[in-house]
Amino acid sequence: MRVLSWLRRRPASDGAALTVPAVAGAVPAATGASPAVVTKPKREPIVTRAELALAFSTLVVLAGVVLGSALVQPPPVVHSVAQFVHLACVVLGLGSVLAVDWFGLRWQLGHGTLREVVSTAAALAVPIWLGLGGLMLSGMLLSPDYGSTITLVKVAMVGVAGVVGVLALAVSRRLAARTNPSRRLLRAGLLMATASQLAWWTATVIGFLNRS
Ligand code: HEM
Image 1 (spheres, rainbow, N blue to C red):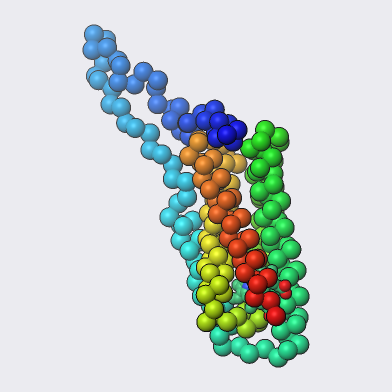
Image 2: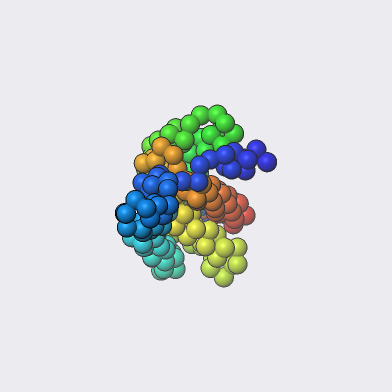
């Protein structure tokens, strides 16, 4: 597969590993120098604990939305306005996620650069989060039926979109800082893009099935 073979051609280094001498540990005893201590370069984490904590804090916001939606009973006019806002936010959020992943796909297929992908992701971060935030707020006013399994699956998918969205921002910041990103980091980016697409599309399809 072309994408996989492309990934294989990428260097496996994080850049940091280059600071270790290529012949570390091979210093001859005759030179009188003390044996070199080879310390394996510490691999930089793909995401830090703080970023992970921030990502999971989106679940707290989602829990607030679920609780809020169980407590409010909006009048029909508010429901109608919320339906429109909900649709507009699907356009904004999913549209922006699609744009970023489109640049990612083009780059994987050999068109465009990683820099383009990363700068598109940075430029569209605000519309993505406005879209997702708007979907949560308007969804709260749409009286979701939590007795339905697909609604629960949808809420889970919204959670995945939120968590992965924050992690993807962290990965893309790291990608932007590297001229020669590691395969690990690239794979993480690919995984996040796939998970985010799956979550957004599943939520969209379930929303469509649940429309009144
Ligand atoms: C990634 C986030 C989300 C996406 C992509 C999404 C997508 C959609 C779509 C496409 C519809 C159909 C709209 C229509 O045709 O009128 C819909 C409806 C709905 N959504 Fe969402 N949604 C998201 C988040 C949420 C959240 C967080 C909630 C509530 C907690 C929610 C609750 C609902 C409800 C109750 C409906 C049915 C509205 C009705 O027609 O009465 N959604 N959603």
